[in-house]
Length: 193
Length: 211
Image 1 (tube, chains in turn orange, yellow):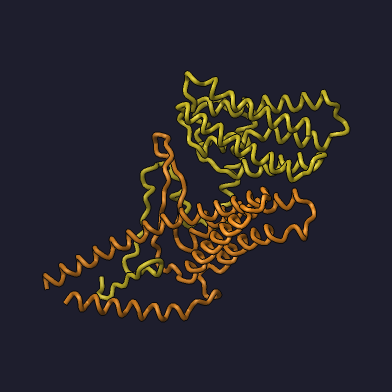
Image 2 (tube, helix red, strand yellow):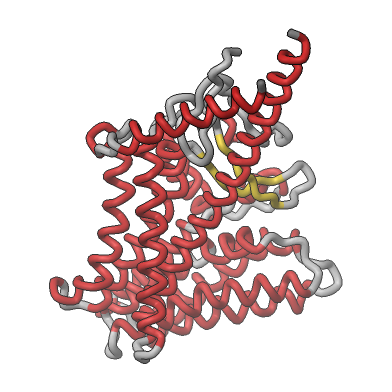
């Protein structure tokens, strides 16, 4: 009886996935403005790293702008984008004794849009890989400044990715906990009936 | 609870038993608890206020421990902005290439803070890495003020006057950072923990005079 129930559940889930895949439309994202900023600061950081030398002659201001874009991207993804697009948050906190502890939280509010989360993860992972690629290719040229900025970009992106990955692992663990609780309840009800 | 309790794997839509879960209920003063739904502007304003509070703490260092509690909420925005500002003011009016100055100041500030923190931790201090980097970065603010003054009043200031301004800034920075750092250091090894801070600010002040 139960395997049949689970079979029906699996089919329903797969059917739902097919519907959702055809609905990846950015204009239907729950928070289009926040998606835009998520992409915008990453784009600014890459653009200024690659092309700002053609626009601004003074190298000092180029460097300052690149650093500012890196910092804005990190802050936006960590504090704003992660909270609104995927409902995850990570930060450091202090226990009453004064030691520092890191917290990884997820909040299961309903209506977490699939478009939002796919935008978030795609661009974060893509940007991290791109910065790692730039770092790797620049290591063999001896332009220390390029290495420094690619290195800073790569480390900030990967730190964010790691933080949110840890949050989402907790989330998946909780979902599996909810699932096993539900199947146990289902079993009990089946046994009782 | 219905039969079609669909709970897809991975990041998808959550249906049915949607509960608010948080792990942060232990800490009583957890500001984060109230910030889950706040609009973006509130987040930004709160962080800006924290930065300004810390800057005011640097200008008027308060020795009491209770006042220092708020400093424990470290953030690296202040050190970043101050390092960029310092590199900019020193780079504008210098003879050498400004990008090498930028690189030097940046690496000295961040690398120096990291080294001092690691030194303090190895000597048994009860200091969190990011807190200490944050405090050392914020305490560069007086040196920043001196650098800005020197850059804009360059023609009016003789060498001796510049020396006095930078010297005052150096003493102010060191005193501000000590009032926080000394509470975290090991009692017996205080001098050897504090000496690198002294060197760090002296190095940065040296840059202000001679570049």
